[in-house]
Image (tube, rainbow, N blue to C red; front, side, top):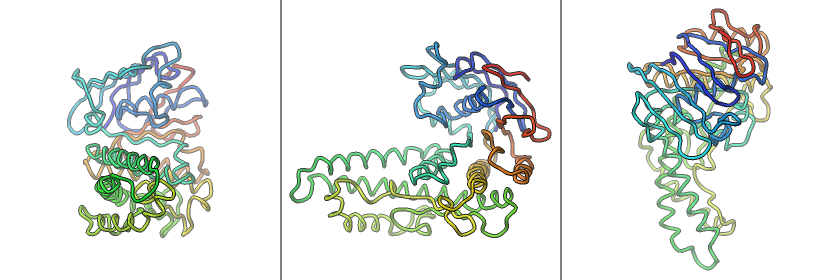
Amino acid sequence: MRLNWVEVRDFRNHAEVSLELERGLTALVGPNGRGKTNLLEAAHYLCTLSSPRVSTDLPLVRQGATSAFLRGEAEALGAKLLIEVEVRSSGQNRVQVNRSSVRRKRDLRKQIRSVFSGPDDLRVVHGDPDERRRFMDEAVRTLWPLREDTASKYERALRQRNRLLKDWEGGGTPSGLEAWDLELVEHGVALTQVRGQAVERIREQTADEFRTLSGQGGDALVVTYLPSVGSSGLVLGEDPPGLADAFRARLAERRSDELLRRTTLVGPHRDDLGLHVQGLAARGFASHGEAWGAMIALRLALARAVERELGEPPVVLLDDPFSGLDPDRRRRLAKALDGRGQLLIAVPDEDHVPEGAQVFRVREGAVDG
């Protein structure tokens, strides 16, 4: 998969920018705050219709404009795609692929994939479990766009069940709780399964990527899915036996606690992703360089998983990937990026540009080839 060209208008700090992109490695070079990351974000948005940095579209529209416009030509899975997006500051965005309107994000996401990594990914390693759950759900969305609503269905059931518990006035069991138990179990089992399958796709590759970056042998980085219900070994198959029964049993065990605390205490909203470096939990014990290497390894492993799934590598976007690494790890990463399909990286100076990369120099709101 690749982007042949990208046009950006009124997106973030860029009034109007056009990029003709090569197949391999492209580096966007310039001081911090000039808009390098904004261009990576625009490329990712063009492929996914979502930002990796913000949850709403309003910050994407340049100050003083009412809409941002993104256009580009992509090649993916044997087809050429002309993608055109109007990101509106208010109201519904407008998206067309090959001049036909796109109603659902997954209709585009199933045709082209993009993997974005930036410094904020350190929260996956050092942050709270919700950051790792978010990463797992993003991995599911990237690997299997048609299954991306699995998480949203579970979240809707969870919200309704929590509202019922919160509004309960006491005495007996809340009316309707059993019905929401059924919904929670159904969607919780589906989410547990698909998260387990996604982690299994990236687990070994993440360890390999980390070994390449760090130069360490053995089990330098171990990735483990830690479901709230069941075990990692239980969820790797398409139909893990006993998972629904285990879920119902755990709900029964925690019923009195849930009624006391008025919230749901069992389910995938309490899952975690175990990350261990040299046998120690990365969250509390990894050095800055180890944590930085782990976050990049996770994203590169996800890109490899997409390639194995579809037969083509996704577009990979790396924001400032070298700054958290020592010189030896920088050299290892630069070498490891070769031969991975199309990669766009943003770096602050020429010293961080890998050999043979296409280079664009970014200044305030403009780009020089």
